[in-house]
Image (cartoon, rainbow, N blue to C red; front, side, top):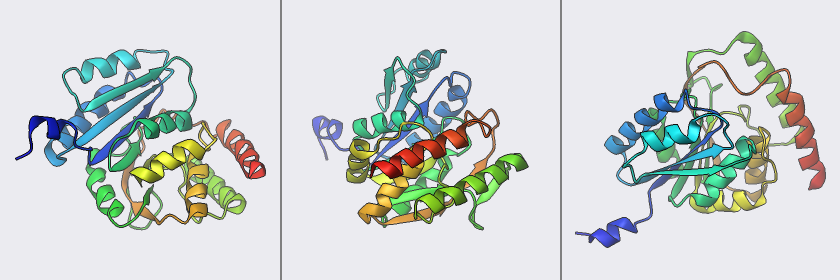
Length: 243
C-alpha cells in the first residue's frame, strides 16, 4: 500500500484543461458534472481552469465550485489572450500523463473522456471530430455555421496539408511530452491555434488519429462566423510565411 506522501506525489493520469473567457453562466453547469464524472470514473486526475482575462465573475465561480477540491487548479491572468493562449498556459501547467482540453460551454460531455483516454493509449495525439459518419450530433448547429465550417476547413487544408477536416473541435488529447513541446513552439494565441497545433504535430511525425464524438450545439458561440474566419486565415498566413 502506498504511503500518503507517495499518493500525493503520484503523477496524475490525466490533466483536463478548460479555457474559460467570461464563462460565469456556463461553468456552473459543466464543472459540477465534470467533477462528479471524474470522481466516479478516474482514479487520479486534475482539472485546470484557465481564466483567460475574464471581465465577469468566472474566477469567483470557479473558486466557489471547487472549494475543498484539491483536484481543481485555477490559473488566472488579467488580459484576455484568446483560446490558444489559454490552452498553452494549461499545457505548461499540466502534470498528467495525458493532457486533454475541452470547451467550457458543455457541448462535449465528460462521458467522452474515457474513449479519448483509450485512444491516447495507442496514439500520441487524438483529435475529436464532429463530421465523421460515426459521430453523433445531438443538437446540430444552424446550417450557415455548418457550411461556414466546411468552407473554412477546406481552405485550411489547402494552406496546410494536415488532412483533418474538423480542426476547431474543442476536444483534443495529447501525451504529456507532446503537450509540453507544443506549448513552447506554437505562436498562435487565437482561434487559429488548433490549426497550427495540428500542423506542427504532422510535421513532427507524431501519431495522430481522429476520434468520432457525441456533440451538441449550445448556442452563444464566441466564434463569430462574420469576423473570426477571415482573421484566423490572415493569422494562419502569417504562421505559414514565418516558417
